[in-house]
Image (cartoon, rainbow, N blue to C red; front, side, top):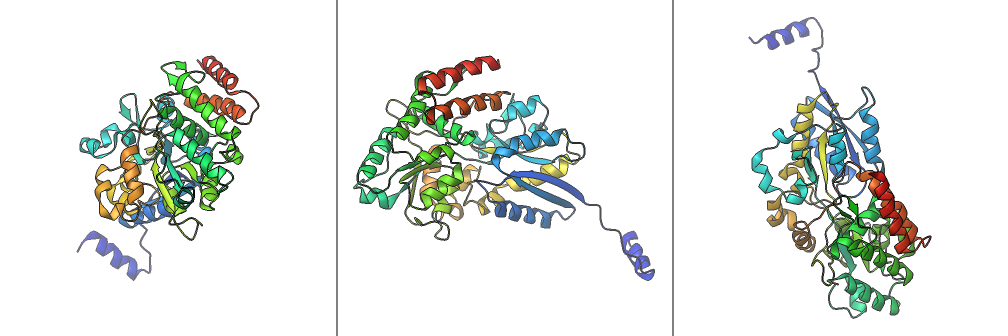
Length: 412
């Protein structure tokens, strides 16, 4: 008879309860907006718990805007930190430098490299090492209302930002909607992602090596397009207060013809329970520009990493492997698409969202990033402040972006 069986018999005879098997508890931090829903994350985690009963996962959700600071604050809180955290593509440089995340390079099978989009890997790469596993692969797409375009006599969605503006003017002049365009231009990272998308359309970025280019070339051209679309009344002025969810709600109410937003909006805006325009939602890659790029795609991907302070790194990695596995991602591919290339030819993933998949196949292979620097958060804060001043009309675009460039120099 096995020892455990003898112990069980003795315990039963003495009326004693067997001690529960030792359980590891992981604390995991996620965001509560865009991409996977809280329900998705909870369902994924429940499946993990069934397969790993000795590991309990405590989930915490915070808005994206609070995610970075929550991770940093927890690092210095003895005994109150996280084991697994969701992090943005622009944070690995600072997190690696400040020893927030563990290097997991050796944990990732070499065979996985070619199976995952390069843009997804860039989310977790810094200094030749990997600081997590890609989990969310995302970029901003141009969503359009098919019915409004049809009423305006527009045969096809725009292929450039010039066409976006010209089609918006037609729609406005016909009185179909007051403001055809809606964006997430609150003073936040969401606005920076929209701005970066436009700069990429003109084949530019807002940092060239160590030098800011806010005040010249494509980066300045992008800022001017934003301000001019407001001045002409084509852009909803409330965009200057909006985050991504506000954009989704305005578009879903039929109050806009075009919207720039993340992947998750496609299926939510097509859900009749949440949207008045379900069945009329079209999606194409964010357009390029004349003499610029054919498609503009900002890298808005995110990864899952193990914190440097985790006492359970092996269990944390097992959880990350589960969450990022192809089987799990394919099962939950409606609000966030898989990081795995092969998924995009799988009927189980593509069914019902063929239009989105077609756009993603063009965009995900050309995603470009915001600067990879340990001081990105400070750089972004400068840009957010000055660009928002221009959009609010507090400063002219040229003046605001010149000040932004000057402010960046002071960060060196």
